[in-house]
Length: 638
Image (cartoon, rainbow, N blue to C red; front, side):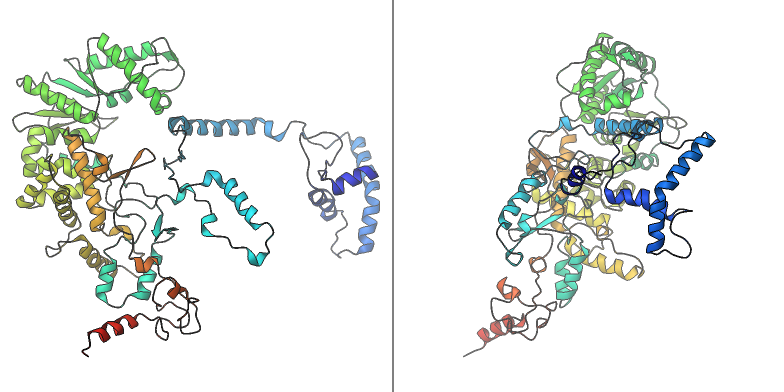
C-alpha cells in the first residue's frame, strides 16, 4: 500500500476493502476489521493454519505470516495442475432466481396490503396510521421527531452534563399513545399497566369504603369491558344471532311460493364470480343473468348510494374481484355502473342515501303492505338485515328472510311473524339488543356474547321490557336512556336485585371473582362491567344507532361521540380514569420532617403516604392525620 492509499485509508474514511482485485461480487466492500476476521483469522484457525493444539506463540505467528504468501503460490500451482479453480459467481446475490422470487412474493403481499389500507383515501393534513386507522391528535408529533431533536440539541450547546435538564415535554409523542394516556392536572401521562393503579390502591387504602370508592373509576385508560387496550371498540360475532333465532324459528321452514325479492346489493356484489381479464360490460351481464336466473320475480336490488362515475363498460379489468373491490373508490364507481346496467335490463334498483339495511327492509315492508296477497322475501347474508326484518315488520305483515348457503351449508329461511310470536314482547326490542351487544357502530362487551344477551332479554320481566321502550322512542331524554341502559347492564352481568348502581356492583363482582380464582390465575380488569359514566356514554351510542335503524337521524356529538380532526370518535367516559389522589401519588425521600419545599409531597400539595421512603406518612409534619386533628380542634368548644 503506497503512502497516498495509506493516508486516505486511515484518515479520510476510505476503509472499505475488496479481498480480491477482480470484481467477483458487485458492490462488495467490508471494513478492515471484518476483512481480518473473515480472511486472515479464518485461514489462521483453519486446518493447516497457525493455530495448533499446542497453542501459539509469537514465533508460530511470525512463521505462519511469513510463509503465507509462499503457500498461496503453492495452492495456485496445485489448482492449475489439477485443472481446478475456486471463486464466486459474478452474479450479485440479490439478482439470483430464488431471491427474485422471494422479493416478488413480498412485493405482492405489500401491494395487496396497500390495496386495503390505501394512503390516498386519507386527508393529507392528518397523521393517520395506515394499519389501524388511528388519527393523531394535535399532541402527536412523531412526524416532527427531527425538529424536536434538533431543538433539544440546541438547548444543550454550551452546557455541562450537570446543567442538562431534559423534560418529559421534550419527548415526541407517537401514535401508539392514542388511547393510552391520561391527564394528571395539565400534564399527560402514559399509562403502561393498569396493575400499577392496583398497587397504589394497596398502598393507600385504609378501609373497605375507600376501596369501594376506587372501584367507581375505570382504573384503566379506556373502559376495558367495551374497548381494547388500543382504544378500539370490541367487536362481537354478529352471526351468533342466526343460530339463536333458529331455536325460536319454525323447524324446516321452506321458501314461500312465487315471492317478490328485495336483494341486498352488498351480498350481490360478492356472490357473482368474475373471470379475469374481462371488461365491465361482460361483468355486468353476469350479474344481470344471475339475478334473472335466481330471483326473476320483480326483484328490487338496494345498493349503498355513491357519487361520481368514472368506470365505463369498455374499461378492461385485469385485477381479481377481491382486489378490485377492496379499494373503496373502485367499489363506489362499479356500483354506480352496475346499477345503471341493471336498470337497462328492467331490474329495479334503489340507491340508499342513508343506512342501506334500513332501506332494504323498509322497501320490502312497503312492497308487502301494498301487495298483501303476495309473499315477500329479503335476500342477504348480513345479520343486521335479519334483526331489522324481525324488529321493524308489523305484526299484520309477514316478511321472509333468506340467508343463502355456502358450499355444504343449506339456505336458511326465517319468517318475521313466526319469530315475533315466539319471542313475544322481546321482539320489539331486538334493535336495542343488537346494538347493546355490539354492532358496526357500538362495542361488544368482553366475554358476553349476543346469544347470552338474547337469553337475558327474553327471560326478563314484562315491566323491564316496557322500560326498554325508551330506546324506541324518538324523544327520549339522556337521563332516561342512561338509567334504563344501566339497569340492562346490571341484568347482563347477573347482578342481584339489591344492586341499582354499576359502580357498587363492580366492587362486589371484583371480590367475588378474586375469591373464586386460583392463585395462578391472573385477574382481568375487562371482566368487570363498565363504570356508570362509561355505560352512560355507551348507551347514548346504542340509542343513536337504534334511532338510525328507525329512520331518525340524530347528532352523533350529542349521543356518545366527539369529533376529533374531522373524524367521529367514541367518548369513553366523562369521568377520570382513577381518583386524583392515586394519579398524583408521589413518594418523597425526605430524611427530615417534610416541612419544607424540598419535600416532593409538600411541594405538590399532597400528604405523605406509606410509600414514602423514610417517613412512610407517619413520622413527619406532612402526614395525612394532621387534617383530622385540625378539624377536631375546630369543633372543640372553647
